[in-house]
Image (cartoon, rainbow, N blue to C red; front, top):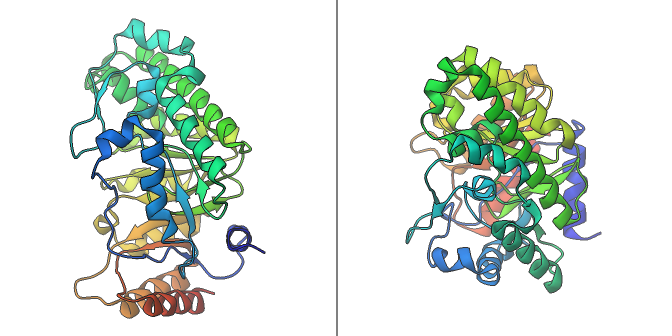
Length: 354
């Protein structure tokens, strides 16, 4: 059995509630995004692939539950740009969205030729390169796919916040158009990867990923943290559910602190796992208890306490897992210095959460 096949088997058992929780053991203190030469890589799938592979190869023989992963790293503008927005790629930064679209242009996005959009062609070329080189222990996955409300925000601009109050009919039309482009882009990506609708391997912006046997998409919804719980329930959550349903489920990411958003995601049947960009804003046991009650997996970085070494960190987190019954895919925020320490860290986590 290959290392990849063994990890997929372990992940499938985890999703069935069997065995210890998973840990994506870090290889080094590595920046989330490698921006050196990024502007050229954005235009060149071959250079993008080479850079992604340099990061992923370090994980192939590493003591971790994570699957080595690569993606065409095209930023949060990926789906909005396919819908018709402009964008900029500043030196030393990720792509930045251009001006919002007119309502007529947003309506016209429903007839965009997704398969032949320039950014989709770059993604497809990246996948073709990866398949041609045959490094089968490293899995390719989706570019950044923002959620329906994030897409709507990028398409319509800041006026969306006034329109939520003043123009509910337009908001419904905008959200329907954003859902449609999300679905069409995602189906095209999965076809390009040769991936079935209801499963995926996803690395979530890192070089280590997870196999999802019953969730085919990732949804990122940062803008909704600016909304009230009532507005979340009325506008955002129904579209998260509709975006996830054709793919059997989703895992959802957001940054910032919004306790009500977390609770609503825990109550959403289509959400399989939740990632927090700012776990340090929350009480860990509060998060774990709500995940356990909602049968959700916390697939997230979890902040370390000041001065906490990796042993104390693992013991504290594992204690929370045992006390709440939550299931966790841990992306550690402490960094052991040697491979042997990483091996020991993973073994300790498995022992304490098994």
